[in-house]
Length: 267
Image (cartoon, rainbow, N blue to C red):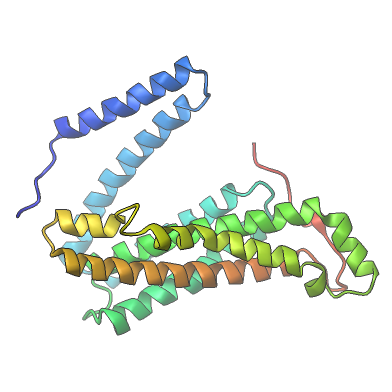
């Protein structure tokens, strides 16, 4: 069965439903109607632009262009990690922690998946590289953002407890160990929930797309399972790297708590 193409009119019907939701938000004074419309407009422009870019990339398979696009994706994901935190690290650390953690986890996992698991030749085939990297970056971004937000917010709230432990002779690792564990646990909860409910409560996006495109359901299920396992690994490794680097940043070389290195929520 071939994929049924969508016309502009079909998309207009879906857009009308979002406008209805924004209207209801305005009537109920929820205060999110404007942001909902902006988000819908952004997603429309971004996805249409992505379609044009991918069409060009698929036609020539340029490693240079793919690398440039991957860096743009990483840069935007790094900014989103920082923007989602209530108390973020100041300066380059606010941006660098999430960006470097995602680079180390998502890019490594994507490369291993393409070369070892799927065995694509060449490994930078855009129809495999971009979707895999996008899914890994998107989900890893969420896990790292939640983990870092939990780390900095809890450290701020429990600063007196941490300083008391340091006064009693604990090392910085011991003083913040329980906070660090909770932060890592919170970063892994989204992907754990996704894996737990996959196939029962929800039908994951990649599997849905493949089935709509005409792939066999069992083949789509295998690909989706692979993606879920890769995302879990990427989210875990990325969150560990970000939380370790972030918790170390909370202390100076003399193991004193330095909460002035984190700021409040961006207004």
